Image 1 (tube, one colour):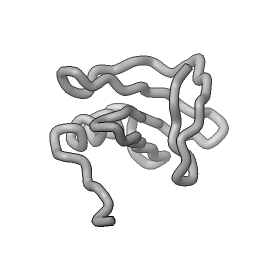
Image 2 (cartoon, one colour):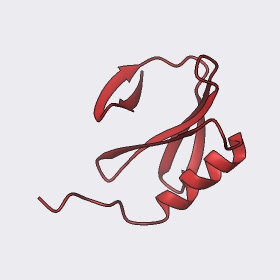
Image 3 (spheres, one colour):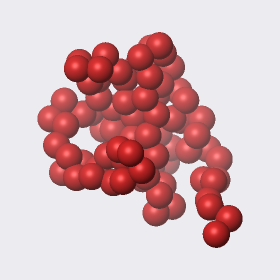
Image 4 (cartoon, rainbow, N blue to C red):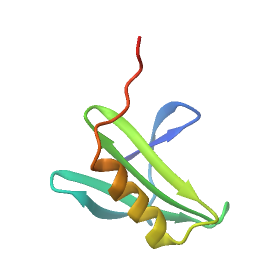
Length: 80
């Protein structure tokens, strides 16, 4: 079972074509290509938060590189 963030809510989902990828030591993400929307997706959980990068305009490698860049920084948290 994989998790996906959609519309600000986390959903359990089964992307049978999702492939695990290492984004950083200790942080594993998942990559999949959604044919219906022609989008590359990478999603992961970090510090108790869920993140996703997706794009139609960027290549698979560019989306993965963006996710790798994001996991190098501390997650932005709400000021609440």
